[in-house]
Picture 1 (cartoon, rainbow, N blue to C red):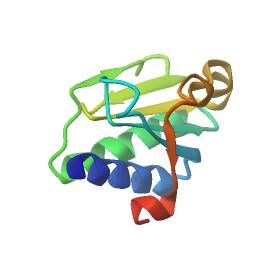
Picture 2 (tube, rainbow, N blue to C red):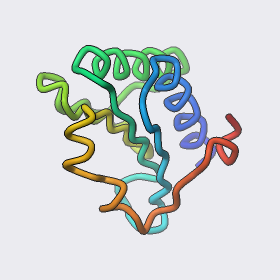
Picture 3 (cartoon, one colour):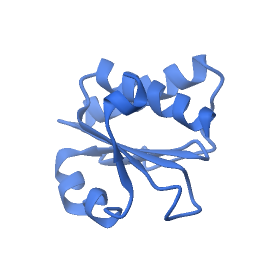
Picture 4 (tube, helix red, strand yellow):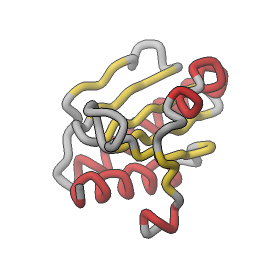
Length: 118
């Protein structure tokens, strides 16, 4: 769990560094077996979405974390980075509204920056 929290913090910082919008962390460990956390953010356009993804991969990679799987790179409207216990979703603004993961996972616990130690 501590490893998951460290990955979440690094991902959040990487998304903030590239001006990711409306960054949310949802703790889902008590309601799902697929992961401990979802990190969700969006960018204004496909270039920013790509930059957000590159920033996360770079920062986590420098700290010894590599994604198990990356999905959606070609479309650049919803890219999923699977780090096992942490899954990072980077959306275009339109797709984020359409898929509304926050509503789907509303039974999870929204984690604040303060709780993450940022």
